[in-house]
Image 1: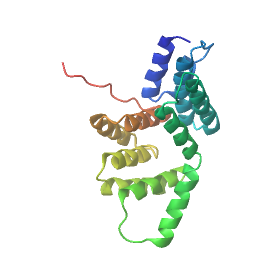
Image 2 (image 1 turned 30 degrees about the horizontal axis):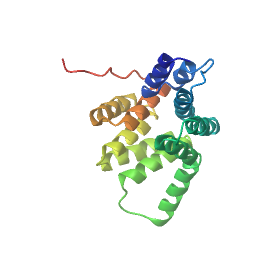
Image 3 (image 1 turned 30 degrees about the vertical axis):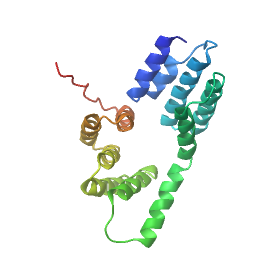
Length: 200
């Protein structure tokens, strides 16, 4: 593995191409703890994006172990491990949150809850219900994050143009997390996103 491999993996991670991240990091790794820590961090994020949470958590743990060989473990690696560990229960928690909310609250519904409701329907394969909740979330949304996530949910029910709109909002916002979420959805759905435009 070379520095070029790390750069290739990072570029693939940035565009949401998780298999390409793993492919770029294949092969023997040099005995350089800093490189190995970064490579494991990239692997962890790609594996998480592919839904392989157990493997992702192990890769994040290995990233912290390698970083510790050179001194203190950076906060970003600790946060990555914590985020992956938390994602283990996110699907179950979404369903539980929706059930509790529906059992106890009626009336006005905020966009964040509607997005979580749409995701819970998506987890269960309830596409019509997901599409309905995503539409309500988009109508209620005042924050770019809620708008992008609602549009991604809508796109995953078959409304491909929603993903292009989500891409435009995320790109204008310059939010790496949202851009990556849109890129991963596009990869899964086979949607080609516009290339970035640069002012000349």
